[in-house]
Length: 560
Image (tube, rainbow, N blue to C red; front, side, top):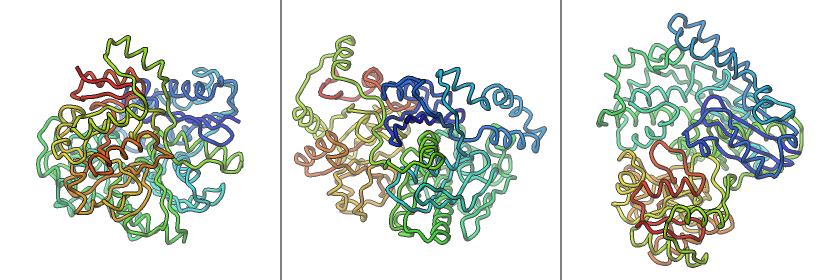
């Protein structure tokens, strides 16, 4: 049985294919179109999934959409009417597209991919819940989903057991923790639904001196339920997220090209502190009402790795699974799993142990492209490529690293990565300025051997998805200085040979050379671009940057 899950028309469109309940392929549309957060119908991602399985659209049994479009349309229409005439422009921009396209999913599926498969619809937050619970190793779990908004729900506590997911408590639009964070993101001059992680990074540079002022925006109860003070927000009726009242409270907003000051850092730190407090209260309440020692989490807000670290350190739950593709891309995965396990009632067969679900390219394809682009290269043995790369990193060279199947989700985990020496304190600036072409305040993350994780962190825990930020032990900061944020934290990825393969072997080789069981790992992309997918993408980015070496499988290219 083949089930195709899809998400689209908001942000991070994606497709995911199940074969008899197991995920065999998943990818975001942006990786193929090269448009970051592409929200269009994921035609390229779907084609990839079908090609990976070696099937045609006629072989699909079900196509599952990650939300209920009519309910979402109802919410948008209701909001526009309620805030009219302020919402007139939003109404004129949004309603025609919804009426002509977004609520006609079955016909789009038929016309775009030529499938007559039955189309199923899963509520947005159930898709998020399924993406984490049905992908987890737990038979029972409390489930928390937090994002900007689905149809109406923005935050929910569920309980999962076996094939069942029961929703216990919800918070509805316009009250949204995701939109609260996005509003301040916009106020700080960053792009909504794109740059929230930048604000999280900026927070590490500041102090929560605006905490009391920002608390005026949101009323929080002991169980984590909250209500926004809507006089400070404008997203119900305007493309501008915040109202003039927010500027009266905090001063003039920052424009995108304006210099970042200590004030902006302190606002970001205040926002982060409030967000963490609310999430911890929600998580604590989830434990109180489920009495379960396992927690699963998903939704865009769950990409806040700093908050995830606070959840782990709180020890409220014994075991935690954070869905690594927690954005709407993961909704495609969740929709497919919900259909197979809950709607159709089949036994659960899938546990998400890695995210290597995207395209892979053969040596023949890579060599052909290198020759066409007239690049000088060496073809080495696997052992030689590991040794050469480790030696180059040890010499403070920046290496582009392209191996195996592309990762699903927003993190590069050693298959589409840029690697560097974690001991060199200058590497951080070199990567930001000369390679990634991005803001100076952005941190980098370490990949490290699982057996050495307690060398740097208090938690001797497998963290393969780079979705948890933790304090670095003081004695370990010097060894991974360029992968440690200004506030003394890092967002680790742990590796083992069975899962990460060649990448794990590379870190072991670096360890033998430098005595440090870690490397700096950042995603292989430039500012404003999606992570690379193909050898063509990799070569294009390599030639635009100050990277020293490029490794594609067993091929080594040195910058001329």
